[in-house]
Structure formats: structure tokens, C-alpha cells
Image (cartoon, rainbow, N blue to C red; front, side, top):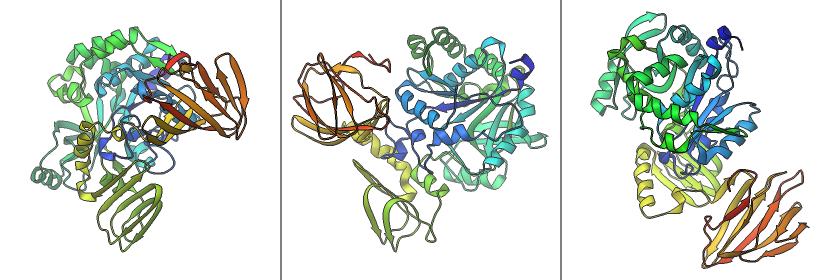
Length: 485
């Protein structure tokens, strides 16, 4: 890539952190909201990755996705499903908020002397009008090329207390306004004043700036973040699709947001570049709670948004998601009903911000439903915990074509496997056997074993575990194609 082309390139940076506890029980700590198909068959992350597919106002580079290493296999699979090749999956060993994440991406994008325009986009937002988004982005490009830090503000249509605001100033060029101030989440009367004034926009959390502008600003304003990220990138290890930063260096990095770390300080440091705002009128939502999802979802004539096997009778203005069973709602109004195989939420649609507090109480009680779903994704496929009792657990396990579990053993449990779909290759000690449908095998406690699928269709087994401890941490891995040993 020549230098001129590299400096005109738009580099998408998808920030895929966060847990989305207000969208429990669909969102869990091990499977947060950006990885969920909340709007249609695609996840919010996938929608974010597809957002620039038709953008033609500048060359667009393959995306950099910055996220927690715990979700790396799910993210990689969702990127693969879109047919995106050469995406850079940059793994954070711990979460440190958006400013360090963007700094890591800027350093990666600046390799070999490049200086692209970084478009930082949270992975968990919804934008309903894609062309309007592309138009706003094209409008913002000249300012960013000139060294400005561009924010995208949303024209408020209600007195929202859950968002931060931007106070805009004079128009600098058509559609680009000076950014006078960032404003914290207001109380209800203040939010109404902001709405009435016409001088305030919601802060979308989407930013555009040159990589060099960001790196210069973070060095000047947050030298500890800059130093920690540079040290972490100096220890970068590339493992297949993944790029791992240095764990110890990044763990020592201060945690801060793009707003607090840099954007709010630019007025006091004009030599670093101006902060400007472009209005974004594109049906934006951060889908921060179930009510926000109801607002952007398609609805029937009674104002109901329904997904799954649900029957609504004499019910209005409600969101019903039925994942696991027939769900019937009679005489409801302003409800949220979210049914998953292991947890059920019923809430007043206008109080769904309070779900976070309920999840915190569940976490204090040590409930596993906060952490994982009953069905758990793995790099080789998935497993579904069907039943558990004293000293036993029953799982349904699906292994993707060509995939393999690790060579492993357990100290405290034995396992019985029955093949119910496909042909499974099983290693047990020194034996290697191919098992077909309706064939079974016993794996004694302490025996090395492995389950593999060498066919072109999924392999499924029913596994019965027996022992005095059945936790997932009772796994000793000897070999693993996913580098989890």
C-alpha cells in the first residue's frame, strides 16, 4: 500500500467489550449482548462489521476487532460467517475500557508507517438507516483528515436520562459543528431542558480521527495508558486468527473511556486538535436495555414485538422473546417477557434499566445463570447441559465438521458417551475407535481421551458424567488445536 493511499484509508475499529447485564437473561458474562442475534439472524457485532460494506467515499481496510480473549472463538466464528477474510482480532487479557482498546488498535494500524483514519464503533449498537450513517461518515472525513477528532451525535427525540450528551457550538463547515462540551447523564428536568434547547445531542460513542492524532493525544493527556499499551504491543504474539497483547503490561494499564481520557480534555489542549460533532440521524440505538430493543424492533398492530413461539392475547406494547417453549401472554401491557432454557425474565417495559440490579443480586447468590447459558459455545461446537443432580450430569455435545476436542482427562469424574448423530472418532487411552449412531463407550476416571469429528456433518453425543465433582475446571489438557493447554 503506498503512503498516500494508506493515509486516506478508513480503518474500522470495532470495540467489542462490555457485558450488557441489562439484557439478561439473553446476555450473560460469557456471551454478552454484542454476540447475540437480537435484531435478526445476525449478531450486533456482525451488523457492525457489515456497516461499511457499501461505503465508497474512502478505501476501507479490513476491520480490527478489539475484545476480551474469553470471547475470541465466538468472535472469530461470527467474522467467518460473514466471509470476512484477514480481519485482525486483537485480544485484551483483561478489560480496560475504550481508551486503551483504541490505543492498541491505533498502534496496530500504524505499523509500517501507515496513518489511517480510525473509525471507532461499539459492537453493541444498532443503526437502522445504513445510508444515513454512510452519508454522515462521508461528511466527517475532511475534518478527520485535517487532524480533528470527530464525534457523532444523535438528535434526541425524548428527554433521555440514560445517555451522555454533547453540547454543540457554531457550524464550522456544512454539517460539522464545534463541540463545546461533553455533559454527564442528566436528571429528568435537565434532560428536558436539553431537548427543548436544540443545542444538545446524545453521545453515540462513535468516533473518527487519524491514528497519529489519537496516539499524540493519548501520549500527552494519558501517558500511563500510552506507555502500558506500547509495552503490551511490544509483547504482541500472533496465534492464527488472533493477536495477543502482553498480559502483564496491559493488566497494569489504567482503565478509562475515550471520552474521559481524551475527548473532554481537548478544549484545554487545542494544539492536539479540535473536537467537532457531526449529527447522525440514522435510527441509532445502543440497545442498552430491553425497552431500547422494543423501540427498534418491528411491531404488530398492537405495538408488540415478538420473537419465537409466542401467543399474545389482548396484549399491547410488549416485547416477548420465547427461545425454549410455547409462551402465552394474556392481558398484558408494557411488558417484557424473555424466556431462555434456564432463566425467565418478566418486567415492566418501562423499568428494564433495573434488570442490572436484579442480576447483581443473582451474582451475589452465586447463580451460574449470570455467567453462562445452559447451551455453551466452544471453538469445536457446543454443549447443552440437559440435567444435573447429585453426582451426575447429562450433556448433549455437538462437534462441528473437522473439529476436535482436546486430548484430556478428569480427576473426579467418569463419562459414558452415546453417539446419536454422525460418526465419532474416540481416543481412549491407547485405543482409537470410530463409533456410529447408537454405539457407546465408557471413559473411566483418570483416562486420557478425545472426541473428534473427521466427517463433513456434525457429530452429536449424549454424555453422562458421574463423579463427586462435575465442574468444567476438572479438565487436564495434554494437546489442543485451540492452544488452550
